Image 1 (cartoon, rainbow, N blue to C red):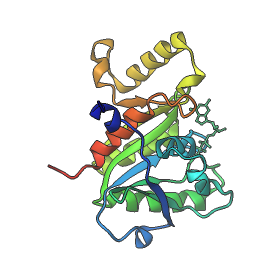
Image 2 (tube, rainbow, N blue to C red):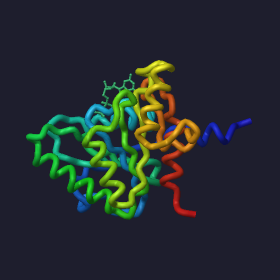
Image 3 (cartoon, rainbow, N blue to C red):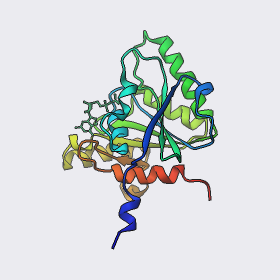
Image 4 (cartoon, rainbow, N blue to C red):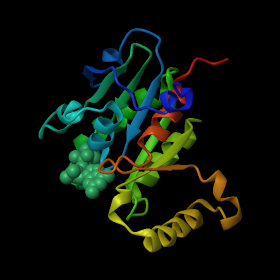
Length: 209
Ligand code: GDP
């Protein structure tokens, strides 16, 4: 007998790169929802997108050095878009780049199709000033933000509980309310947490009842 719950939690299979966009003028013209992926450079974003799409090089295009600041749109089964924001963490010197990033993010956060902002952070780090700026940006625009803690495989069990306590303190959540921790814990290497994240994304992107 087939198990519907197993099917529901599979990552995405029909994912296609659609286009890169520097501003809202180049966003797709249809009304499908956007699920945004943000995070500093090297946070594991390309690997996570590849894991979600079950592909090896889907998100490689976003990594070409020297590329202009573009958000990459990936179509999931003609139902919604995964939107890959450029990684941040620019040197102070790269002011122009930062301004481009801010303008692009402002367009995406203002877009009525945006359903959720997923902020990726390496599980071994805490949010840096760029992450905090993004969190504040999402909050000020009334956007729901969820954390995706990446590279779970890099720490053992003991370290994991220590790290999660630090995250709970960060969020002002105590041990008793663990169930409400607003995060996903993933590893693109072992695929831990990938199916759960895919399922949650489906729900964020689902049409309003
Ligand atoms: P991006 O710059 O945010 O797109 O980061 P990448 O996805 O390219 O990841 C940067 C490096 O971290 C690469 O060498 C990846 O193989 C590695 N990496 C990404 N995710 C994981 C993970 O979950 N586990 C491990 N062990 N390595 C990872």
